[in-house]
Figure 1 (cartoon, rainbow, N blue to C red):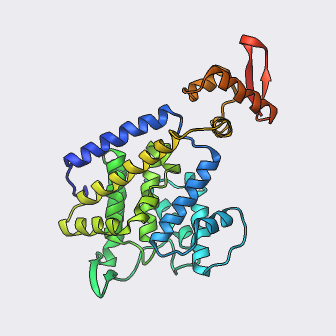
Figure 2: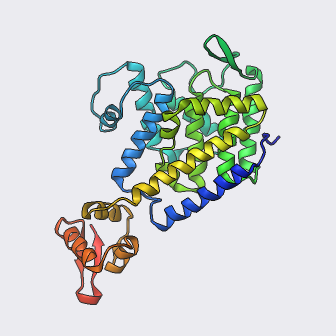
Figure 3: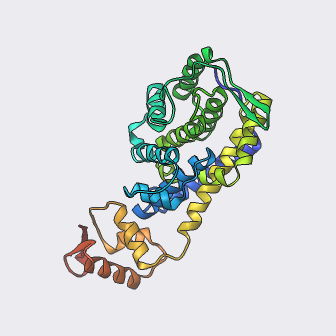
Length: 317
């Protein structure tokens, strides 16, 4: 059974806007950010997703853990971050359309934090806010069937990935298949679904915008619960994604210096290239600036120069 939702004019506008921005991302070679930006975004993703769940560690502490340094903080918070690092550094291991992979990811994400990590709940649960039951999840006996149906939707539906990822995120939160870790699993799995079609989502920390205004996130979930369909949540998440890609493009439009350009170009993993190839990436620089960049890159041994004059090429070291 296909999960219920409506295609609204707002959803259509957001899908169009996101698609245009993704085209711009690809045209500007931003689908593979520099290693430095990738690391920064990974830290932001982990920090934001866990902050939503009450984790107290800072971005600086998470960076330290990424670098295998010791930090002082609550044991539970440190374990949560270490588990998330293992997941986000190896996203390619998980198949977004596989329920088995989904359970393995939960087991890794919640290892040492809950009993029966990687297994569906065997008791009833509800979400309580200020002594009021906000959401009563379906009976635990229905969870395996509901999740199987949800993964069937992922595999067989011809919905576009942008919408499908939002539907999965909402429906999984509604089913609440685990005793703990549902929120971070919903956000992780939406990332994986989108990554399969658009690689940029591996490095796009849209969780940051969610954590900056968590009330909107929970309101969108609650409104969808009340209406019995995920339309409101789809609109909310597409808006978050649209804003996140906009932030990435805004970052790219900043003034790049020589070091930024060289670091980014090397991250594109080109084996050999010419000055023209370099200028095709950085369209706004002059040929003189490109020559100075390439001279500097050669001096600091990022690449070596081969040939002379109009036959000059460069080989990445």
